[in-house]
Length: 199
Image 1 (cartoon, rainbow, N blue to C red):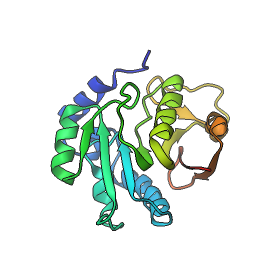
Image 2: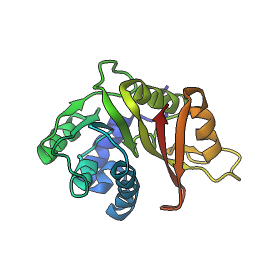
Image 3: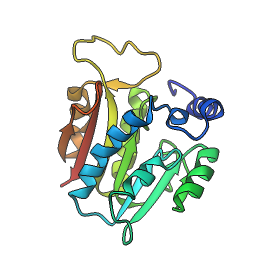
Image 4: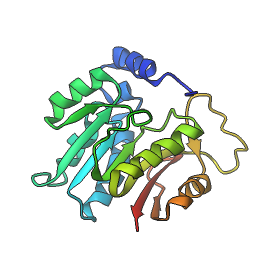
């Protein structure tokens, strides 16, 4: 069972905060952009023709990236399971945005890389593994995602809401997939980004 009803959770956030970073549970635009900057730096140094933004929200990642990366000959696609966000994102980005649920839909678009920024913050352990597996299944070259980092001295995840992993837990989860993995830390407290390439 899901830890939370994410559709209801995000609908309430959008109703309260509107089309803002807080409407998709970012603390601020500054923290949102710090995560986006890490993703942008990765994309600037690799070859790709297409990406899927898994959990695209209002399309903020695309709007950030298009100011830094030439998308003239690249394809961006977004996926979100909230119809209102899909509609807003499609209007803002003018890109293909699909109303799908990564956990449950099997007709997902294929792309060189799947990216998930903040998309797994409310999943449980099983859902996180499945979400990552699905991204890998439909990506040609690999995945990029950020996740909340649990302090290694915490015996358990003390949060009833947020999904947290230690770095070792994430690496253990990814081990069966035989990936080339880069871990990026230090840009925000209690947050890490994983760049996992297929070999």
